[in-house]
Image (cartoon, rainbow, N blue to C red; front, top):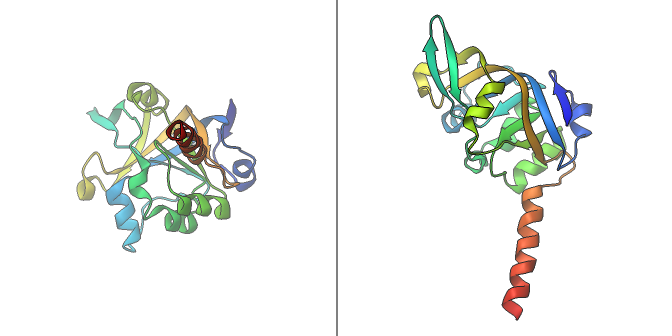
Length: 190
């Protein structure tokens, strides 16, 4: 397990390879469809993502006294953000994107160019993920986007995942697709 601690500098991120298990400690900010569209439309973002982490997640969070309590924080499918992610990576300086299901070749190319990785979080384990994101340090766009689409700011401690797309242009998702196609072709040839 490779421990990544904020700030996630470019050299540290470029040293990672697809397949590496990582533990992330530091600020992690959520961003889903409305957030990405907001950014793509040229609106200013209230978060500094430079050398930080973006989590494709719509957490379940409840009011707890003066603050917030995280009940569930599983990843959402990242493919929906493909139209926006290359520009977001280039402009924001984000180093880690967390989600599930992977992203497209254009996003992978942006990761390679700008020094960013995609970390696959475990789907179906939202309560486990929430334990690593217990401290909510703030929220942006709650009124504009609603709770699930708001940009939540967490102080993560030991959030784990696997580097599935690295800054060298390697995608585990692409490798699995290629391998599956070869096997299917073999089966169909019989």
